[in-house]
Amino acid sequence: MLKNRGVSVESVRESFWLLDRLIAARLRGDQAAPARAVVQAGIAALDAVPPLLPAFYRKLPPSAPESPAFTEALLAGNRRAALGIVNAKLAAGMDLIEVDVAVIQPALYEVGQLWQHNRISVAQEHLATAICQTVQAGALLRAEPAALGERRALFACVQGNFHSLGVRMVADAFELAGWHSAYLGADVPTVALIEQIVADRLDVVGLSVALPHHIDAIREVIDRCRMALGAQCPLIMVGGLVMNSVDDLWRQVGADQWRPDALAARREAL
Ligand code: B12
Image (spheres, rainbow, N blue to C red):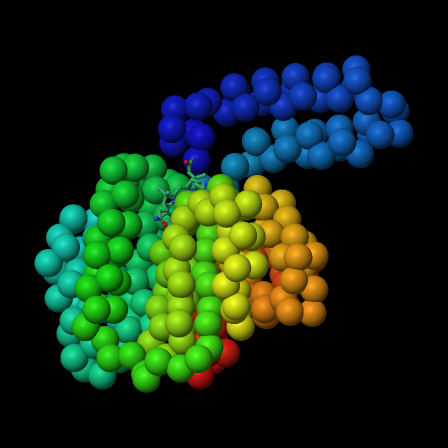
């Protein structure tokens, strides 16, 4: 990825070499040895960079045959074509959450791969995201939700996580299943999120994390909610890219439940 962005392998090698020197100078021998082994393995790996980088996901639900055409529409910035594909699927009897997971999600994962390989620009990736948000909102407004019941859920990206489309699909699934479903969006400040969870009388809290550095924030939210609410704490469900990549991470952050995608999460709502 760095190479594609004009950062040379030599520059990365030099950074690793400096890191190795720093570790050797600053850490005790028994602490330095395992750390240096990691850095040196990194230096050795630089000589064998694979032509294609691995994808950052392991669990992708089955895609609909229309997903590649939807990706094309996103990359061309053709919102009308993207809407047309989604509308056709809805008209053919697929429900919104199935379309979200089988058409929109694989297309966005492909956009991520293309961005990672520097085959599309940052602006194209933003345009693709914006089109998906419009499509999602439009389809939700036209969908027919089940009768509104008593159950309440709140969904949010923890502080620092800007990846909001996935958790929005989960929030929409609960909404359509007849829940009061609050979707707070991206990067919700920890203190504000905890206050809201404590104030609302909720049955389910859904928290989303995409990258490894969001883990501290999700752990903090869960710990503080449990402390504040004790036995009254709602069921805490988690998800997102990093949760899908590391086995058992959901348990380690103290959640009650992990679901890999919006369709799996919806089963809890029905
Ligand atoms: C769009 C996008 C962005 C947008 C997000 C805009 C928005 N409003 O959401 C922006 C431009 C902000 C962005 C920024 C960054 N991004 Co980005 N982004 C993406 C992209 C292309 C799509 C994300 C997406 O919407 N996916 C589709 C949704 C539907 O999938 P999902 O999130 O996995 O959600 C499903 C499940 O995970 C689950 N789920 C999700 N949340 C929850 C919650 C609960 C409770 C449950 C039950 C389930 C659940 O259900 C969802 C629906 O089925 C991904 C590629 C990818 N593979 O996802 C990269 C990606 C995630 N980003 C990446 C990176 C590196 C970044 C940046 C660091 C880039 C940078 N240098 O600035 C920043 C970090 C921002 C931050 N602090 O969070 C990398 C992460 C690599 C890694 N190490 O894991 C990816 C994978 C790109 C890649 N290389 O392929 N990004």
